[in-house]
Image (cartoon, rainbow, N blue to C red; front, side):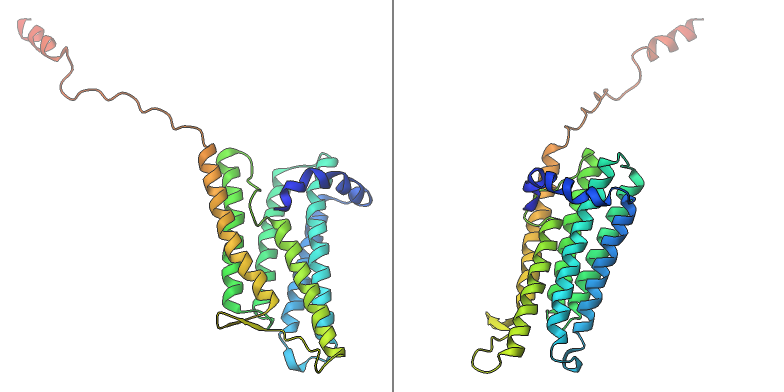
Length: 252
């Protein structure tokens, strides 16, 4: 949904990218990827659970949210710097997409083992995210341009994961400092299923991801050029001059 603000964000990206114009775009792509991997490792560390000191868990959540947010910033800057420096290339585009998919994989697997999310829900969310990205690149393969529209673009999921990580960090921190009557439970039951705020974001990824993938597939299908008309089918049988040729040969 944030893709509709791309033009509004362009002048802000211009200012933000000025200090990074001396860097190669692929350096920014790798920086983004490493920040996402750092966030994934932070989620894995959260899986240690009770063995963590009381204040470490909220700090890990806050650190993960910050790493995801910064990773998203660098993910936007690499292409923007490449365009400003006229360094766009197929190799850079391939590297960016490959690192993005591995970053998605690392983040969702880290969340799955963090102990703060349903692992099955995290894996279903990962499937939806990969389908969304696939439908966008498939449009590029058949139309020559990507599809970015839909309920769940890359910017949407980066922002949502950042926000829920920050919310969980302050939530856990508040419960550490104010236990007792003001304690807010981390899990609540919906239709008999215990869920955390992280689970709600993952559930949105599953539903919105499937809707976005279907929308992109339908839109790509409708923009395809009409198929070429088949050549006319000739009637079966011997050629028209076959009989005359054979009679001519016999007369000779």
